[in-house]
Length: 285
Image 1 (cartoon, rainbow, N blue to C red):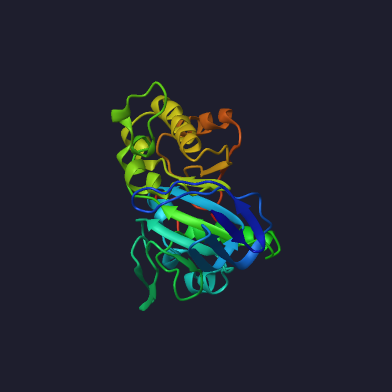
Image 2 (image 1 turned 90 degrees about the vertical axis):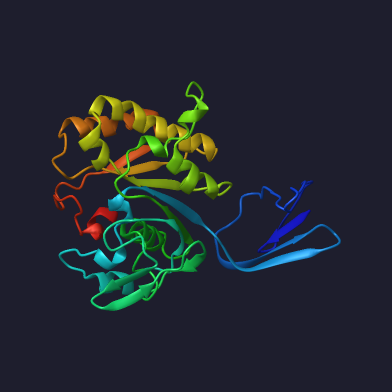
């Protein structure tokens, strides 16, 4: 098969599954805002239009990650203003739930914003109401930081009120039966996507129900599991809890993941302290 993207050609021998799926690895490509992709086996040709080449983020966690743009309220910016000033980020809404988010039909001040589900779309002021505010605002900030020259995409897949363990895939030394059900339902189907970095906002459920010693082991195991399945040591950035659950021991438990390397975090206790703080603009920044 020969695949051509923006004038760059890659050829290789591939075998399709019985359902017609096949995979071809392309060489490193330059950033392209929009181009076409053509694939040919010499007899038949398939083409896709409006393909972007750039950086893609994976966003997971529980309700604070699922917290929607319709509720994103900082001291200087309303939800409507936040949506109106988004960069043209490409977004894929796999799954989400949280205040003002998770629904493809979110309302802000009686205005409904339809957020497409399970399909790529370009963010705009009228279609992002139910999308993750942290995910969307971080991707938008990254796009602007890169001078608007590099396309940025983001994929949201999160579930409110969830512990970390169900998001952890099977690892060597862990029985297959421990493969997390949330990972299997909402993360594994994203394969064979590749991501430049992962963003994570979760921990309240574990801080209330489990203990910091357990989380200090399970959280790094989840990070390692994601990296192994996606075949990438991509940076992993989490939001530090800003509530009073189990502090400061739980902060230390979260920071156990730093030993893996390529892991960072955003401290937000100086922004707001609440179970669902609405200021996602400053968290993203």
